[in-house]
Image 1 (tube, rainbow over the protein chains, first blue to last red):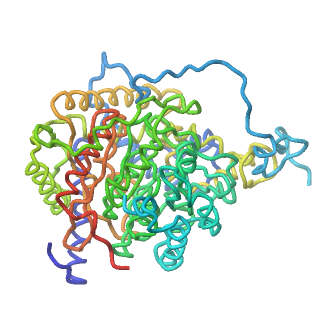
Image 2: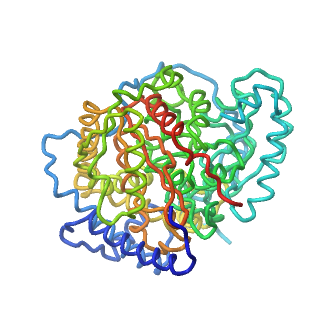
Image 3: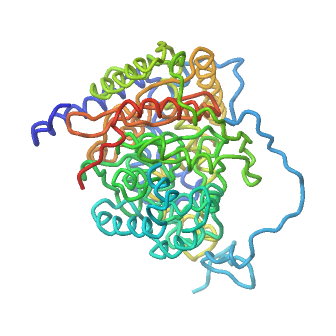
Length: 134
Length: 469
């Protein structure tokens, strides 16, 4: 095993790492199918569907990063998968059905112990429609 | 396992061992940050099992913070579960406790196990015991660091895309990612439900087996578990003569760190010298594993993480109305990587894109599994590198999610195919950072992998090397 000699080795390692990272990326995704860029409105729409309150900065950053990731994912379009059945689960031989029998559940107070707000043995939520009056 | 043998032989007690673990946490964890929670009462619990004849008779262990242990907080490395106290214990942990194991604490993880460095933990970044400026890998980085630093003899981790094997590689320890369905996922905070598996990290294969044997089996609370009892062959010394080990060309790519390839090839030579037959094989769809994974895992995550809504779990943000609570709790309390994956998954599942993304990814997943099925018609196990590089510097991947995703290119295929993977330390690079190799097997063939791993560790001493701390 070679010894490590401080700063110089480390610098070389770092430079090397950057080139590894870049070439791996080129290798893993040699062909990028039509670069696709999400629109700001699309990112806002996804955030709304996912119920995430995001700042404008976050929306802008995620737009760039998600577009980058989706570009790479487009590689899957290279493959002809006609006639291939989708794989939804990794289990071979498991039987997902059990007898439909009543059995004890966890006690109510234990399930409510983490609730930010609870009343009379139930989770309490703010108003569903309208807004809380100050 | 050395600690277990000493307990069985009466050379030490569970209480003494547990106290030693806590003393080591005290001495090291202010620089390592492997733990998110340490249970100071563990020695008292240890006293209660000291004279029992349970299989694990008081063995102290650590548990990754995405697994529920009643009586200890579970944050999953996320601010959205700050202060959460789970009302039940995960089946895998419960089985170990029933067998006499003592959980001393919860280890750090990337938020909801999404990451390859523990830098995505909302609380703290764990340091690599071999070099405190480097990451320990992830997402089970806290467990890997705790084992490598000699704090605990074994720790539980989870592996959705490499999260046991990659930190094991980066920290120079052993780790088993079981076959999907072999260990119950009940009580594991779900990330990618069709990929998640619960496993063990330990210094050597001998440290993994006693825990693995206790954890496996059918669980009525996890419908995907399969009743596959322990097969005995790993107890006998392996006849390496006639064992066929496949070496996939796709896992030795231009651009990977040269020393990783060198050490892995040397390890394969060692297996050959022990009598194994080495067979070059192909897993032609390997390059598609990354895009498939980054559709399926985020899609599953976007559904699984919908439950964190500010209603049932501590804490809550916003107050105007229900919608405001949902959006603010999630927007303020989830970290960037979790938000990215939720959004990616939401997009892939949204109207108009479902077939193009999710549907296509599921079909390519079938092709990846077929690659493995065909390979296992020719070979008993596959030997390959775990990560293209050794542990990288903390902060070096900055805000570049793709650079981080590329760390997992060699580990994702086993999760997509649902096959087991065993990580073994096989040497070091020029900077004295550990390098690992994985052995992958057909579903439910962990015992074969353990046998090969034991034979390898009988002939080498990489698993006995310890960092200077």
